[in-house]
Image (cartoon, rainbow, N blue to C red; front, side, top):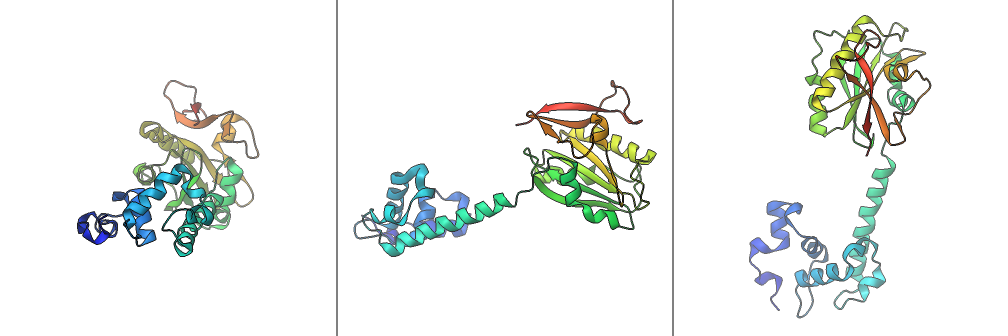
Length: 260
């Protein structure tokens, strides 16, 4: 059997990883790098292919004892593989645990509580994936909101970069009054319309004051206290329509989309 050194350098797993990155390698190639060396009569690439074939989709569940059943895999290599798998699973579990799902306005408020004490007006955007999991929280502007100065690209460019499925906007009122101003309503209408065109709907626009908040979504649904954005598999968002009754002087309506 050919040794790994007899394989052209361009085809060796380590060299290909360094030159082209992990995505250019197969699962067995990646495992070969982890194992490091083969055994008599079988190079490391052939050994890794044997392991991948044997365990297939159950690879992430293999134990040290499972690996010791393979000829050429001793305790040291078995521990090396099992430890690498356990490390990846641990990090993946931590990542899932830290995932922030935005179910309602209360979840939004918990992420933007600091805005209550700001002396200047802020506009913050929460970018969400299709499961309403937070992708990114970003400050869009600081200072008085102006419909003429605020351009939708400032909000939707990051959304396209993140491949966001939807977004939520949060604005604070240092005055202490969370009621939407005429300018707030104009801005909401402008951004909601842009979101409908972009295919990235605005789920809610929330105004925060020191002791209270105002949710356009909750006003639209005529509910209060953290009414969920998703119910029975349907997510309701704000969407612009020229053919619907006006909502709070802005042409906003309830729009149901399949949530999956």
